[in-house]
Amino acid sequence: MRVTRILLLAGGVVVLAALVASIGLDVIATTLGQVGLGFLWVSMMYLGHVILRASALWKALPSRDLGYRPVLRIRLVGEAVEMLTFTGPFLAEPAKGRLLSGQGIASAHAFGAVVIEYLLYTVVSAWLAGAAFSIFLSRGTLPDGLHGPVVGMLVAVIVFTLGTAFAAVSGIGLIAPTLQAVGSVISARRTAALVSRIKPIERVLVSFLHEEPWRVLELLAFEFAGHGLLVAEIWVILRALGIHIAAVDALCFEGGVKFIAVVFAFVPGQIGAAEGTYTLLARGLGLPVAAGLTLALVRRIRALIVAGLGLAVSVVWK
Image (cartoon, rainbow, N blue to C red):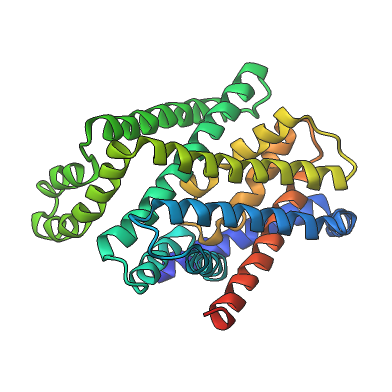
């Protein structure tokens, strides 16, 4: 697995280098320089996004016995883990659960709260992606070869939404039963051990969705606001580059990049994959491809800035 990750990372670096070479290093340097103070603004906006997600995580906890401040600290630490290890949510989300359980919260509820927040974040991401893909299809501006995959992503968004709605309305989980069905064919013993760990967490998740509809709506509001900041930062970055873009196009851009974490989940940090997707989306929106690559790079830099803050917080803010 380690060798595979190294190879994927190397491949991503090659793709990124090829993109920079095709556009021109001097052009990229110039556009990054144009952003200027925009780096400060987008870093603040991304920090606001992280704070809103911390609020959603706090609201997902079973009680208010744990204050908001330690939850924010844990969320910032999780951001540092995600960005600085190139592991994405695979390590960051479990790390948040462990840190929450270290605050005296029962393990099932700690990990359950993390899963609740991440699920609702993903639900809103899926809806934004669905809206963006629908607009792209209606405009007919997708690059050749992407029509089929985009339709497939729209179907996946619908299936995912229906599955979440089913769990919320029925109070019946889908993850553990699915794993049990698959495990009966592949490896019953290993699957049974995995299901025994997942069941308590899924029970917390399904109970929250089924029994706390108003809290679900409250969390969705936080997630929508957080995603709204991501849409706004696209507008800010492109405006700094002298590109005027309509709000709906900024939404299409943000919605279009949502699938990167899903499709390229096993590429460390989505290096190369993210940059390639940003340039494709820029072309689909009639923007210079240099602007798309610059946008991707600016977002990496501001995420590293916030991750550095999270690392500092983990050391200083006890």
